[in-house]
Length: 104
Image 1: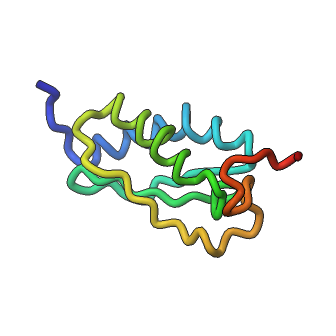
Image 2: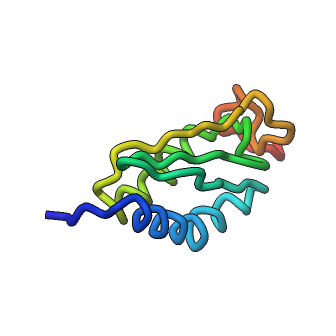
């Protein structure tokens, strides 16, 4: 059984994962993901730069960020994205491109 971590400890672990793993990965596309809050097993994030408004943001969130966090912290219940994706001014993949290369 995995021990339950308090919100402060979970925040620190998640912040370390963002710093060491997630943000270096998304920085390759000009993006950044900010950790906004951790409360009762819910991790709240905001995507910035090339991630804000990106057509692949949901894939990044679910298959990248969520997978990494759940592997490290199985007690996490939810990852919530509060990004205003419509306000993104320079998305890596334009919405609706479904992963086609930005250099095509």
